[in-house]
Image (cartoon, rainbow, N blue to C red):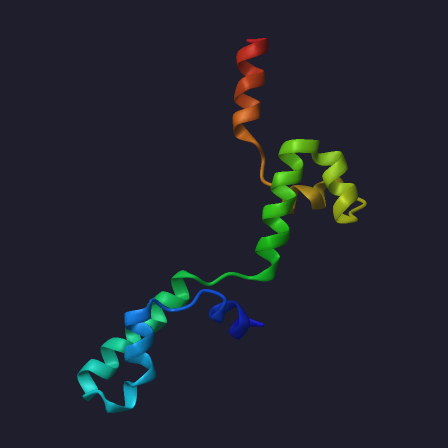
Length: 99
């Protein structure tokens, strides 16, 4: 699964070309290319759970925590809180309205 997530975001073309021909490069340049590839993959790393978290946050913003919890198949609201981020902008609007 990790390999699939790493490959979901391709390397920039110039880095991909260098990485494909890495065996022909001098050692110093090979190390630099490997470091750049590693840095790129780490900066683009994601997990399938992030998809669930993102979608839960979107659902909560539009439909509320109760329906989000139901869609996620959770029996406890506290579990829904883990996956769906709080909508702080909505809380600020409410506080402005009620004082």
